[in-house]
Length: 303
Image (cartoon, rainbow, N blue to C red):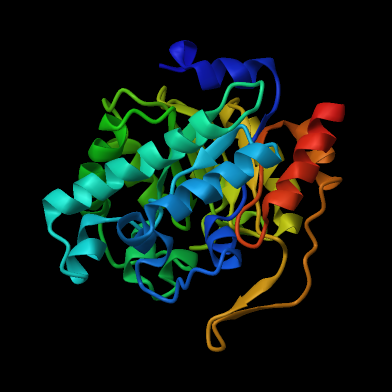
């Protein structure tokens, strides 16, 4: 799997630039995302807006676009009265919209699509994706994730982004579910310091992916920029795989006020240090937009 993946080959040759936050780009274009489905709602209602958001990142300098399927699950769609067949169509559409953006982008470099597989807590829409410990067994979590991963894999993305994972138990479920799908994956935890959000040491969390052939990179996302350096060292040492990092801007989410607070601490200059430490897929998550991704791309390509 790893040896035949074009993206894995690109990682062996150099650094690949990821995109930034989908939600902030859609909101900056005037779309209301105050909904439990978040950006996934626009897959049904405004698919062209999703394509435009991907295109903005490709044209800014991103090599990889992460699909708007983070919050897209059969259970989440069912709560909105969307049946299983239509939900599967929307999951597949998320990959096609990113492909459409890649076709439209007038850039002289390879472009890839990563199909986002968000955590179980994202479907709950109660902030538990930043806590983990859902009260579900590994088997139950595998049964939750596998069907949508099968649909996303059938849409033929270049890679599955198993992202914003707060809990090593959920990572174990995702790593079971990804086997046999025929698509490589990266595994990315959301962390605080040197632990997962659920409190497990990162050494133990990353070790789960060390011998999984489908996994072409491991790392962190949706965390503070200050948490990245330690995670890179641990991920590279424990797994020997390329490292993926895409932190938030550094601002903090105030769940009560439903607003971002504080100041951004993520700068394009930080990424050269992350690359030197072993990161090979580098981008941004929440509140990191096309301008910042353009800065990251320039910093990395200048080196």
